[in-house]
Length: 311
Ligand code: CP
Ligand code: NVA
Image (cartoon, rainbow, N blue to C red; front, top):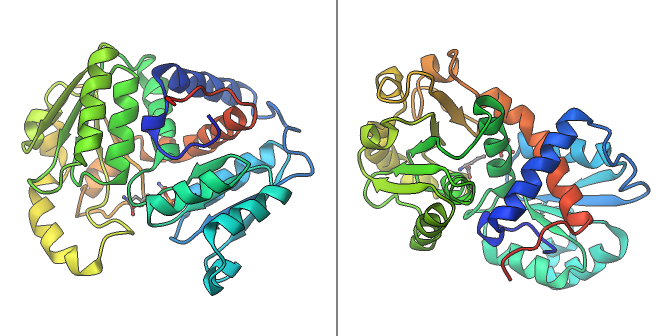
């Protein structure tokens, strides 16, 4: 498997490989420190980013390479050069490409034309690097993934999708609560149900946050308006998603030792209250720290051809 575009392209074994590599990186951050020596990794960001941009840059540096961040205004893409031509050219200088943009089809086109690994650093549909760091964070906290319920409450967007797909591959009990009309795509629901079942976990999709959170070891949420969502939707989303705010009351429905997770950036007072995200059960900043470890593991795995993939 050359690229990491979405979690659903991984097998359960691939996910295990990534989590094991991440554990090795955690023990020894200098692991494979010259893998990318004298190589560059272009990082194209068409949307803002704090964590992904910097953790991936740090991961490239730890592997001995040089990250080169480029925005939409800096490449000839802006002037009509095709994605395929850009990919071919980058392939002659670079070791891998990291891309954050809007349409998944653009990232697929880039990956098809690039002779080097392409890593999805967030699209409208997926956020695979986040999901790897998230499972690493849960495993770090509870020692295992299987046997724990992870409840996602809120908008069924990119973060929800990658998280539920990864948790299903890991055999967790996945529960998702969204308002009607904000569910993850059908394809993600089918994948999660099938893989959770295959790997010894479970899957619940509901409109009731309390039902999703019941017996959960992890309660997770994300912003109500994503970077790829039209601004005009803000008011409608706030209204629909208000009953899905993660507050202390909802946390009492979860297991006594339950943790709260959020990919960040967070909007306190919208999807989560300040008391929850800044409270003792919150792992949000541990997740952010684990983004570096996860990015290093993913880059290493792709560059050394450790993942089989589904196709
Ligand atoms: N969680 C996450 O991807 O954050 P950034 O948008 O800051 O990269
Ligand atoms: N769903 C959010 C995640 C940000 C990391 C977005 O796409 O804006």
